[in-house]
Image: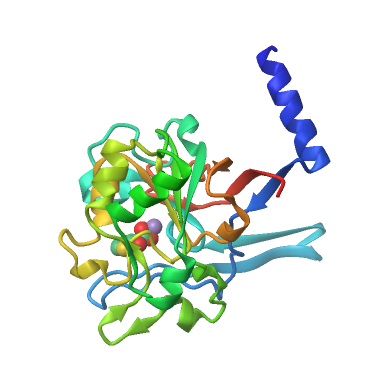
Length: 262
Ligand code: 23J
Ligand code: MN
């Protein structure tokens, strides 16, 4: 079977529904929740949109908008250059990352029950090894997706879960990141929360371990994903190309998964 046959079959499978296309993206609008950093730091820019014309005297036959937001607003990609530990890597920005790295197999860790019981739930190496006992070793070049059902929190206050001592949202224990980056050589991680690190990760050692160590290893992040409950533990493919912003640290993007029919 030639290589073009594989792609023809893929297109047929999408047409027949044998392969489902799952949208892992949240809607992008002014009310889209953004990360809240400690007050001494610059804050993420919420999504703003305005109309240039709408079939009116500003443009009689056309409708179009302008928009403004930070690179880290809504469902978005984190590039290695985002973090100081990744600033000197080659091909570390949205315009220079090799495009092959935007596509990879999905390994879905289902911690919905754990994160519902404990908003500060952290994935550990033991947790990942138990997952591998059931589903097989995480392949190189995978996207490791952390299902917490956090995207089902449609109230922004519940989603951000900000308290006097900072946000309480699930994430990664620090030692899981070198394990995934070095020992499993993944492409990156994807999460349902507003950022790839746990809400309390500013207090961890190192602070923000997912950002510090994942980008330090020239790997990527995906934040504010949804519909991870629509994916099998293995067997799906993630497609996540960010905008080609020159020297971009990340960008809002559409994230799709190809998954076998249920
Ligand atoms: C800037 C500073 C700290 C963090 C973040 C951004 C993110 O989570 C992000 O969106 O990359 S923790
Ligand atoms: Mn980000």
